[in-house]
Image 1 (cartoon, helix red, strand yellow):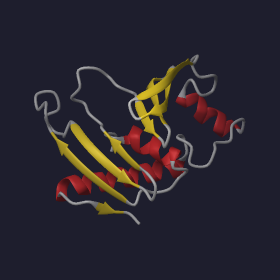
Image 2 (cartoon, rainbow, N blue to C red):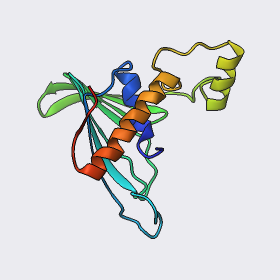
Image 3 (cartoon, rainbow, N blue to C red):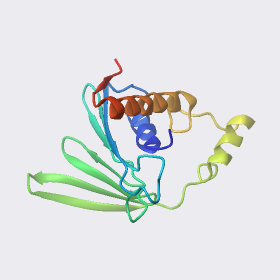
Image 4 (cartoon, rainbow, N blue to C red):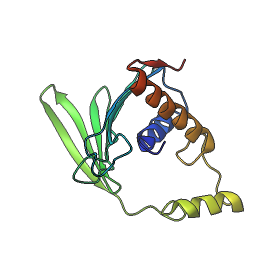
Length: 161
């Protein structure tokens, strides 16, 4: 259930714990020699009342990716990596302004997931509801991934509502 977990986790956080209405997944094995026992590429579509997410987990790409694109009514956010965010605001259908923000590495304890765990156990950190580190977020993420497995095996969309 590791495959696709980042996208499911982040969407659960962005949607403030709302479960998707449906999950549709297509998977395939593209590098049998490197991943002989598992699918290594997927497209997972999550639908919500007012949003849709397309997750693209893969062990098939020639480079590692940890990026995200968020499309809104008037612009797009491109999280190219952990330290860079591009903001494009529409000025017309084919034109936009763009600003790039650069961030320092995350501060303690968020620079290390084990430090987050220790801070929660020690009582020095209280996690926000459905935040990326929380059990309730990760339970929904696992539900999304289980529905993805069922969808890819059956060829059908799985309803979660």
